[in-house]
Image (tube, rainbow, N blue to C red; front, side, top):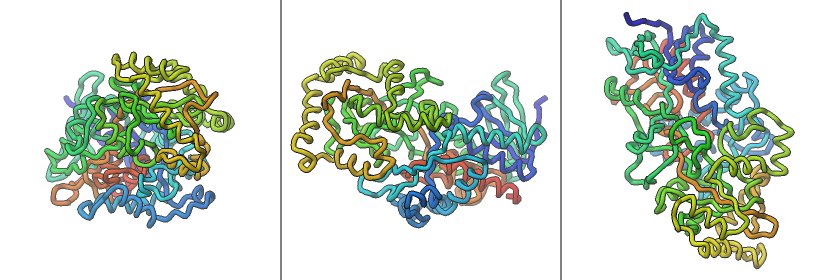
Length: 537
């Protein structure tokens, strides 16, 4: 006989959006069943590995740095950068809700849980033509988002204990139960033993993550009008395959919108110790590195420089003749600028080791580049450009990189410095100088100099591929996180939060994110769903 588990709220997915929804419901006295496909130690999902950056508006950190931000200015930047039009009513409403409430509903809420942010506010996604963040908004959690997960799990224990919260790990939901036009539960399979369980609840919340964690699903959703590389790495999660999105659309009439919009990363290499097949590490590209094609030629005519428009970078990388690119730099650049996105390779921030964090910031992160050179075959080091070209060709089993071409590429760039700072004419150098005007970027960005500057070696080449990451589209929801049908009517009893809802409305970010909008989007949509459930839906 099939076991039936009853609760007031059923939450499908144990990422940060699911945890926050559960916490708010428990605090209101609701009983909660939270079902997740992964192992118990992976509760928290991708937030366990994420960096913890958040785009926030009107914070004390911004005021201390004299950043004159307002919700009106943030909304202008958001709509312009995301290219959200009048035919996107719910995404636009969620964008407005985000900028107006990120301070009270995210920042203040997290501070109330004892979480802190680094004092420096970073300026990311500025736009190639100033059409992105018009000022700094990127706040970094002290402890990374792993600390956020730890805090939420501790709060869940305090709020629910064993009496009101039931956690079901390694359970896969195969469909939703519904009767008389209302969703009333789900069917789940215990992947440990194959047993089926029915999970009954008057309120069901989809917190299943994105729809492009599986390579085939990602390719199926890829916009036909955009170039797609032959191979890609996975920076999402294999369980984020969109199955419940499609089930909801097919059986309940839910609308999946903006499915082809994704927030991918243009530079990554295979994880040396992968957690799943195709697992990729996302690199925060060095601004001072030369971004080269497979032949060792600089990609242009507009050079590729990070920090301005990640969406554009991904398209430029995807349209290259071969599905990889190279970053060429030297040791001087690497120790100051090289970083890997996420908690795993940012131990000083993750473990809250402030003195060591400051030491690395000032003296350079020699340990990380040595670690990657030791662990990854995709990080190549050599004292000469000719030797480096040989290593590049050996890795790709080709003769693509002519040493003379690589040398000419570097000589052409270095020629900018032969006549002094007043007579260079290179857009990458201009962008670097612009970035260094902002204090936090100055600390992490080298003063422009020749790659062949004496004493700056050895030379380094990173073998890079595009890394899939977040879905920007999802199930369309209203401002109460209720799933909407084709007639724009709420499907009774069904909610959707976080990445599953495109971080609100089925695509609140549009085509581009201002970066750091994802964790706050999870929190905002989760809290909205919980409020609606508590109020009676």
